[in-house]
Each structure stands twice: as structure tokens, then as C-alpha cells.
Length: 189
Image (cartoon, rainbow, N blue to C red):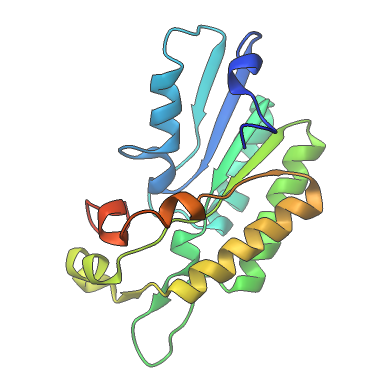
């Protein structure tokens, strides 16, 4: 990522950074908060958080996307899909968003943002601790499967390649830690 994208250099001029995603994108120790803290004091950088807890790609596509386009962000960071890839923990194993629908939603957002002149960064999805998620969200009947995370990350990479977006592939870093260490709070965050 650093080879393709030098945030410090971009910060020499006014820059609008938009973040799209779910709670992993904007809550707690997220990319949004880490970058905002790292770039504190740079008055020419505007941070725009379009992330909402529980969002799926279709929510971004229909609700938040028009707002992002209207601000003409220089850079859009998108990390969305954890809520899409989850399944119902019952005999249906139903996705909350099918892989085909997820790809269609992501493809549209990336294409339109790039067409508007925005540099797009897509970050791969982080691992989930199913045991901790089940313990912390017992009434939600959620099932997170590693093979689904891999599938959705492959979609992210395919969409990025198709449109020339930047991929922030975090798997090598995630692989250095047990999932339980990465998801200290509740299995997801």
C-alpha cells in the first residue's frame, strides 16, 4: 500500500479522506481513528466518516453513497463486508448478502467513485472469532465462516483489479496473530 499511496505527500495539499464501512471502519481502534490521530495537526486534511455500525454493502450503495459523491472526496477508504458475509446460524445457512450481490454493490461503488475522480482504497476483511461473536451476540444467530471471509476478500481483490483501485490486503498482518488477539472486544472488533 505504501508503494502505491503516500498519504504524507498527499497531505501537503488539501485532501478530503472519506471512510465507508461498518463499525470496524469507524469504531474504536479503526483505520479512521488511527489515521486521524496520526495526522492530527494537519489542517489541510479533512476526515469524513460515512461508516455506520451494522452496515452492509447494500446500505452503503443506497444510503451513504450519494453523500460521498456530493463531497467529491480525494480518497475513499472502503472496508465493508463483514456484515454481508455473515450467515444465519440455522439449517438455512443463509447469507445476509449473497456473494454475487456483494460483488455487484462493491463494483458499482468503486466504479462510480473512480469516475468522480476519487482514489479508492479497498481493505480486506478481518478474521472473526465465531466463539466470541456468538457469546457477545447470542440472540443474533450469526455464523461467520473463514471460507466466506476468503471468498469475500477475493471479491474485494477482483473488483479492485477491475477498476484500478488500491487493495490494502491485511491478511499477512492478520496471520501473525491469533484471531482472539485481533478481536479482543467481542469477536468482531
